[in-house]
Every structure is written in structure tokens, then in C-alpha cells.
Length: 65
Image (cartoon, rainbow, N blue to C red; front, side, top):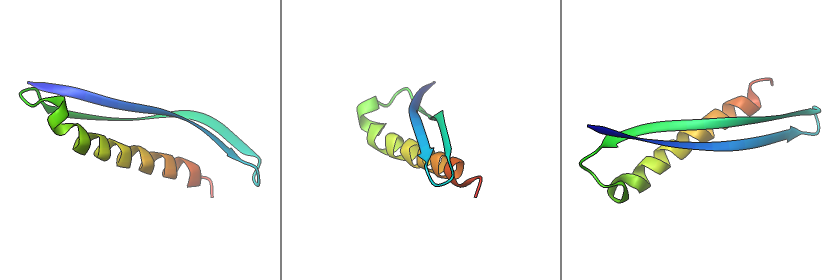
């Protein structure tokens, strides 16, 4: 059986040079084996999800260049 872990952040973006602003939520989801404790896998999974969300935010901010 699997356990799902989800991380969501809310970003407010403002580019004063191009007069752009938006607010969006970005999420990343991962799963791990239910036989493992969250404490045992948390650091690696959260790092993986943060990297994914960082990529999403970067892509959203440079998409209109």
C-alpha cells in the first residue's frame, strides 16, 4: 500500500518592469511505501517536491519572455 504526500505553495508574482502580476498555487505530489515511516523518508521526498515546485515556478515566470 502507498501513502501520498502533497506539498502546495501559494506564490504572488509581480514584475514591475513589464507590469505583470499574478497569484498561483503550485503543487507537487509523491508517494511512498506505507511500511516506511514519514520520518524516514520525509527529507528526501520534501527535497524532491521542492525541486519540482521550483521548476514549475521558474517555468511560469519565464514563459512569456
